[in-house]
Image: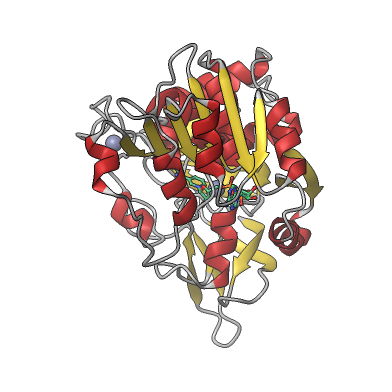
Length: 374
Ligand SMILES: NC(=O)c1ccc[n+]([C@@H]2O[C@H](COP(=O)([O-])OP(=O)(O)OC[C@H]3O[C@@H](n4cnc5c(N)ncnc54)[C@H](O)[C@@H]3O)[C@@H](O)[C@H]2O)c1
Ligand SMILES: [Zn+2]
Ligand SMILES: [Zn+2]
């Protein structure tokens, strides 16, 4: 079938929206008609060419939600008409990691996905070369390629959600929001009555604030460089906020009788802030959860004594969320009124305006731009 999609042709250049071919689903695959997709930093990062593992041409986008249009042979967990959220972090339920409750990092399709292919090593995306008319494959991005009217994805990378959830809200659970919620709820498992600090109030940090609240934290301090974003953090349950800077650790120590916080979260991508998050964690049992993606080659500088005296550091990919099991549960909590998702939806744009989505993100204008696809 023909679809319109935003193709990364050349690093550092705007995406080009064009008509391309999408082949139907093969065994174990599902064709999804996309309704909405969030624009995320990872898309912009790859488009910029800074990511050394990036490739082109590819269809970007990974925060998608839509409706199943057809299924390939052997697909049993999804049927035509099901509402789904796309998962760049799949869940095969069979690999050694999926069978462990210690991690959500599924091993089954990692290598092919990382290289831009579906699990069988081929692509469903292609286009006609203008010269000789032969078919040129276009690679899939993060196994999702959701800056498009439709996509083909492995069954194991789709979460079936309650169809009552509006898809332009549900798509936010495909990445940043679930990452933040999960960092607090799965990775840190914040205890009721605890003192939490969240560094960063973008999509991920605001999700962590909401997750800490849902776990019953008593104090949730949010630290960011933007007053507007700190206001949003209050809306998600932050009890205290202040502007970040060199004195952030000192201020947390003052608020905690000199000890530090039970749980700290880093959601900025800055290694300097990661260090602050470690040092703001309490002696004895403070846990620092790192979610930010640092620049290539950057390292986290930690004095070992901080660890010997009982602080711990955990990393969190997609918030430790096992996507097919837990994304539907998180979406349900939104429908139950526990999570205010509307506050994150800042701009609604068309597929043709995808590059404007990057500009808005670059200017830190709002939390998320959503591409309306249907
Ligand atoms: N672990 C994962 O699976 C995963 C998933 C999605 C995103 N991420 C990463 O998480 C990070 C946050 O993502 P986002 O979408 O929320 O980004 P964002 O850019 O919207 O938010 C980052 C926030 O950090 C704030 N900040 C910057 N410097 C600061 C400082 N010194 N003190 C306090 N706050 C500061 C900024 O003002 C901004 O509001 C990024 O690094 C992103 O790549 C990780
Ligand atoms: Zn993302
Ligand atoms: Zn697995």
